[in-house]
Every structure is written in C-alpha cells, then in structure tokens.
Image (cartoon, rainbow, N blue to C red; front, side, top):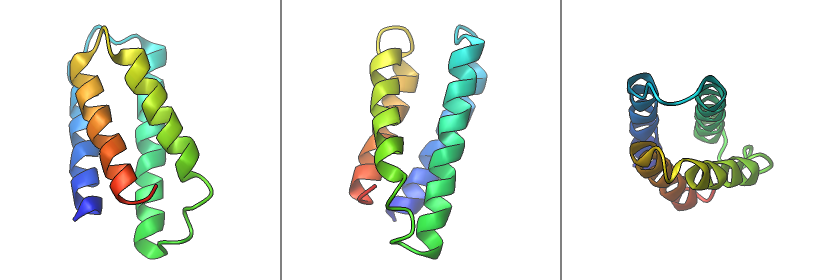
Length: 93
C-alpha cells in the first residue's frame, strides 16, 4: 500500500509542478530530478526490497531539504513533499 500511495503522491507532485508558474526553472528541474530518483528507488524496491538501501537516505535528505526550501513560497509543494517524506519513512527509505 505504501508504494502505491507514494506513486500516487508522485503524480500529484508532477501535476503541481505543472501548475506552479512562480517556480523558477532551477527549482523546477531540481524537483523533476528528485521525483525521478524517488520513482527509480520505488521501482528498485519493487523488484528487490534490499537493493535500494544505498541511495534512499540521500533521497530522504533531499526531500527534507526541499521541504525547507519551498516552505514559505510554495506551500502546496511543501505539503506534497511532506507526504512523500512520510511514505519514504513508512517504507524504510
């Protein structure tokens, strides 16, 4: 259930990135790269739960850093990123 929930939240993140015109290009690219890395970790964990153990802490840290970065100016992105962080934690990533 957590993997599916995370996949659904990633869809929300992509949608929100498309709807947020005030997001600068660097931040938008950074979020898209991060979303891709999360998706890749999700796919790796689906095939072998233990194979993704080296990169997830870095992904979790980047999600947390992004939350702090977007908190003041992009509250909807912050909410979605917080949900992603929660799901990653639930999955042990």
